[in-house]
Length: 604
Ligand code: EUG
Image 1: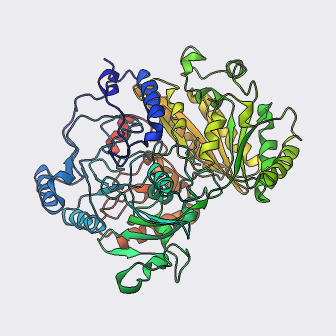
Image 2: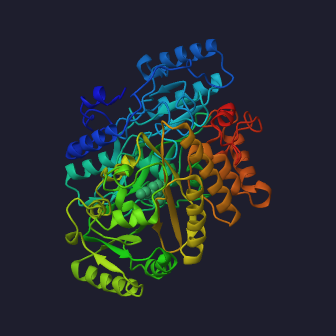
């Protein structure tokens, strides 16, 4: 049975109806994206649960029931929902907060016992104190769209998801003069963008490829976007945090109380404030729940997106070496993307079966054949860049960029006017101009029931290093039978090399291969001295331990801080590989050999 009939009838919730909904300007795109995705689905929209509610570790049914009753009485019965209903993967705009929609292991493994919805910082403190009382692990999410990295799932099955976004989604401040804002966890790129438009402010936001994520959540997870303010963590300015013991803290200038109980007028003005700068320990960590974040915005600018195509696969290292000085000198306006030509196929939104029969990866010849019928034609790599400034300045910048790239044989330069209106370049115009959209969902039409995992190592911006990583990744994909989709986000000194591993979540054997591939890539890159900037929940132990200089000295400090700030080990145990004393060394951590679903399940 296909699950598409029932769900397709209801429109995607709008932003006016639900905090995580879609802006009305994108309703048509959303409807089209959803029907394409659901047309590729063979799994039912949900199936009966095979197992009872997954309880928190070391918690009996009786204690859990008492804990739920107690929390219901303090934050309201409607704000504590036990996860006992059929699990629905949904899709990007109607996503679960109970589990990972892109489940790498069985759908019922990485699940929570309950979801709770605090409505204020004070209620977050209440939830944290409750977790300490009952020794129940909690796992905060902002929106829950950390797609490819675990989504909304808790690392520890049976943990209680604290869904911050549902009731804490206000833009606390939006300052047109300072070009700053203060946001709660539930503010999405869509909603912040909309508010700026509604107020008619000449400001931009920076957004990632998909616009439905949390501004705060993405920054705290050190995500990136594509305007000159693409480093989100670098643009945060002061945090409000609930510590694992329930105390409330503000960092940066936010720590300084303003006049008569107001916030400090400098909270969003200056990042470095006074004394040790501890903000860092609250990003990619499990040391506090960020409930408010000051954030810098950009001024709107004239901008010009373009792409450059390169003829040969082997030009890869030279392309990287050509980008480096352009980026370091500030000629490149943003963080550009360098994509392999195969991505031109999947951003058409068509499925792999359009281009290839069978289960094997597409051959280079098949890719060439299919690409030759697309607007950019047969080539190897595509560079998507954007320049900012007045028209004359952009012309000068483009002259320099064209001159540099034309040193590479067979290079062609393209403007949006050179490609059809539905070409991906027009989506770059929007994202790189601060307009959050949904185009990148088209990746997921590649396979039936498509799910994805990101493998995200950092390379120096140097051809020979990037080549080492690319060769490891290509070899691994070939060995395990996956198409390779590399997108490189290239800065002056480093590259986020992102390989998007797409798999069919209905196919257990394919999931196992995806896990094996990811584990081997982490291991093989680490052997060459390269590590990931971010990873899916199930790989965080392994990645964390590759950062093991001097007998895991970094992890030992992380654990010491964890034990000090979270003595009962209640906050997101295991997140980013950091286990509190209570669970450390008790068999929870997953390593390079944990590839079978059964092996992993036994440790979950
Ligand atoms: C992308 C970029 C990322 C990431 C995941 C996906 C882009 C995909 C630079 O970081 O972590 C097109």
